Image (cartoon, rainbow, N blue to C red; front, top):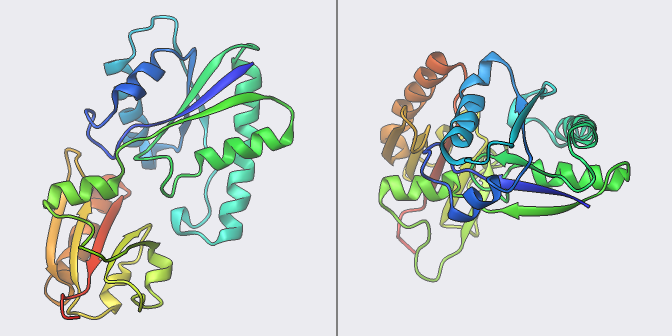
Length: 253
């Protein structure tokens, strides 16, 4: 039977990859990569850099396919995301059927950790549900942008006896959760934090651990506009921006 591995490759630093991930990459026959076009060329090149750096198996091939356009980007509504993943499932199925033999081993490289706001595992489950191809699915964890954010700011994400809430920009725009004191926000394309309580603390990072990393922290009221300017500069420079932040309620209760 075929094997498909989803390999977490970290959030932007080429050394943020585990020994398990390296071992897996050297066991695969094919690494599949989705090409999002010129607007995200750096993401594809980083994946290629990971392969060039760590794969020593000369028989391993890299196969690239055009990624279907995602309406509204990562912050798109649920239906738009579901439709996009369904189109991806069709492409994955064709790649696996066409490029892997009956006992071949293929891999997709997931940005950060496959378990956190990455759809690769879910798409491969959809491929299995279509029953046109079969394979054993394996998932190799990676260092997430959340972990890298905390490390770069030299903080802990959690405080003693308190929960950590992870959400999206779309949801945090509706208000800071009453039940939470510490909230990690991902997929925020609009800077939703600017509409929240200015006394909240924020630890923000873009391009975390990469060459173009930007880090800002402070009270939302004091640094919110500085963060928005840094986001705009990163988007202007690269054509896209990947950022994550922690919002922290003042320690007053």
